[in-house]
Length: 301
Image (cartoon, rainbow, N blue to C red; front, side):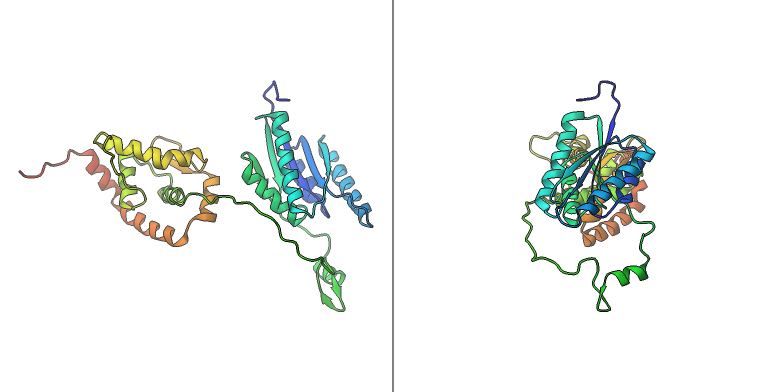
């Protein structure tokens, strides 16, 4: 049910196989109201271990705050099962709380299958926030760990033997439009500098990032170029949450999501070329602004 008071509910999704503090500490840090904890009860000798881990997570959280913990007993070593489980949890939270829920997804605990699936689920569900938490101190010193995970004097790690590899079925997640990424890279280079609409159109054109091509039906003039630029460049970036208005008029700011898009998808060679072009035209930007502000001289007739 949705909150009538407007009070937001903080929900966290996590998985555990051999972790406690990687789950409990973030739950306390985010002041979690509801924790959806995915684990596998198991039927072998490790069942007692899994149960003890869950009990310890409950105990640690209960010492700091009153958090509802919902357990999900699933096959944590199957990617498809984990993707379905995380998606179902996110959907159920949205159904129950609507827009009044903040969803945090722990991608540092649990199996590799869960971690990959959880990250994918966050990319498919806008508003689900993935987070990581690094280890500050290990329970087993390096020397002791090497001794415990060695066979015949050679370190082999946690696993002594493995099963046959299984292919993971995937589905396509479209890459961002290359033109939009290039537009975003331009705004990243622009920074928080103020830039009038006419100057912005000139800069985009000079850098050959976006060039205004008037149509037969468009009205001549700079306003038409700005309207076309806003529709083709700015509006799509804002709609995707990659760009937002800056602190004052005529400023634009790349969002954290936009920064991530650039980190992952921006072509380094294109970005380097764009940076060189931009630095060249940036020096003359004030002159461009002055020229735009001053009346243009008519050519001699």
